[in-house]
Amino acid sequence: MSSVDPSRRLFLKQSAVLLTAPLILPRRVWAQDTAPSKRLTLGCVGMGKMMKGHLGNFLPRDDVQVVAVCDVDTTRREAAKKRVDDFYTTKAGSTYKGCDAYNDFRELLARKDIDAVIIATPDHWHAYVAIAAVKSGKDVYCEKPLTYNVHEAVELVKAVRAANRVFQTGSQQRSSKEFRVAAELVRNGVLGKISGVHVSFGDPAAPFKEPAEPAEPGLDWDRWCGPGPLVHYSSVLSPRGLHDHFPHWRRTWEFGGGSITDWGAHHIDIAQWALNMDENGPVEVRAPQNWQTAKRGAQLIYADGTVLTHVKGKGVSFYGTEGELHVNRGKFEFLLGGKTLHKFWDKETDKGTSLEREVTLTEREYLAEAKVKLYNSRNHAQDFLDAVRTRKRPICDVAIGASSAIACHVMNFAYHYGATAKWNPAKNRFASGGNSKWLTRDRYRGGWVV
Image (cartoon, rainbow, N blue to C red; front, side, top):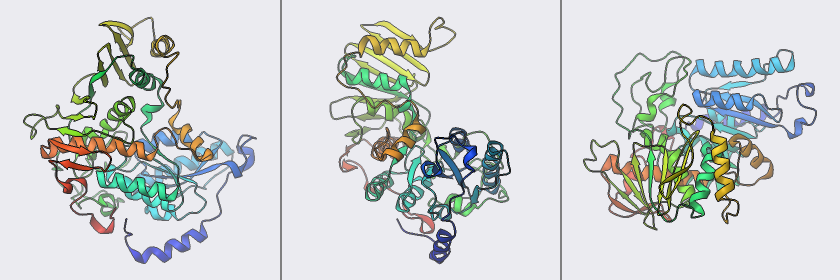
């Protein structure tokens, strides 16, 4: 990864010196058992909708303190700073202005008083910021999909291991009981031999074609585009002012990967967890018929013959010789021998029961003596903080997040290039039938090279 704008190096070194003293709230504000020396300080990069949720999780905690926010949009940046300062003012009972706001993430990373960084930028920035963060000695929680392409995933894993940092991927479905139990049912052979998996999410990405709009005041558009192409400004990519929706840069090939990497990074991740394919992946990709216009139908094939197909369905569905299983957020359906045994899918039709009841009963009845017990995390953010303190790898470590992202990118090759090819998951490259140029960008812009 190369640096950009070398003239800023002196400034960053000076910033690191000036910002070594942590801004800690008065002890009386916090729980008596949380000493300042044990409180983790957080910096947040990318202050959009996802980070709003993260702030909601972290701000009320006594064992962490948010001390810095960063965004290339002035409005979002200042609103996030105000939210942090206002929250701690209320908590302290006196005026607090200890949260700093940055346009340049490197200034935030230069601070030696920050323990960990939360990254919720658009996908095309994930790898560069994350690699810079671990090299600066920070532990990292980074949103999924972990990287924009295969090359970045490989380089990010190398960087995290070299820096020996804790890294949690934001694949929070792993910390939900219904997904863990589903994966354990598959792993323990309750469904018999799995022949097929269906994953349900939206359309592949399309090229950016939105009309040009006047630039948003206060937005550093060149930096927003960053490693990607410098396209004209569009509020579709970066909405004006504060917003409460997920911007549609995700739908573009230049900055995201469509629903394949957006929701696919959740559902394919669960499929690979259940198939024992963490830090592994498919050995083949198959393009759908009429791939140029197809929205569904791409397939990933695993070494044991299991075929994973992108469909319009129920979330993640496993089909075995003895039964089938469907799981989604807040939804669970378990069948053996064609008979539904436990189900909570729709609160209007599945009255008189609950998700917790059906999942718990399934676990008691079919997994009480299970030989395979998976990592049990009940809260994704808490799991990250626990890992930072214990120095153990969290439930969705960087290598797991990378392998799930790579599987999504391989599926995207089917839609974007019509690829039907053999894939080598150990080396993360094509074994035959593909093009190595697809694994990375044609060009990284402005020196932001991974």
